[in-house]
Length: 161
Image 1 (cartoon, one colour):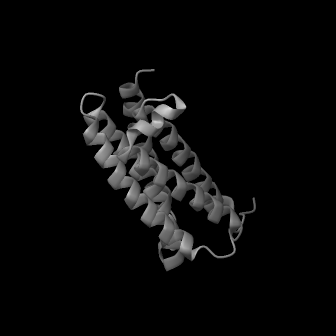
Image 2: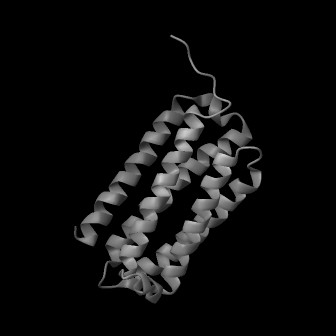
């Protein structure tokens, strides 16, 4: 698949996930009443929004002007890292979420590093924009894991038929 096609589909999918998440949140107004729960809701939002924005910048810069996507990936990865670290600092007693957030922090850090030093991707036989794509896919998988934990994890009461 052509990398620009991938990023077009990827970005559209991530923005769709953002919209779907807001529909879920809208139908559970109680989730935003508790500050701790509101932070997790926001964390899920960011886990889909930042990769969506990175995908847009990858399309704008592409391979012709890599400085555009590299700068955007670096800046957005720093934002993602800070947001995820703030959530991780508040995670107490839920090892699943802590591991998910630690993994996301690591991926955001690697995305920023490749944005700053794209030659590192060549050491694993990839173009920088391809390496970033693989890490963004992993971020979305971790975002889905966070949604799953939030929706059906411990502390949620199962509804009976």
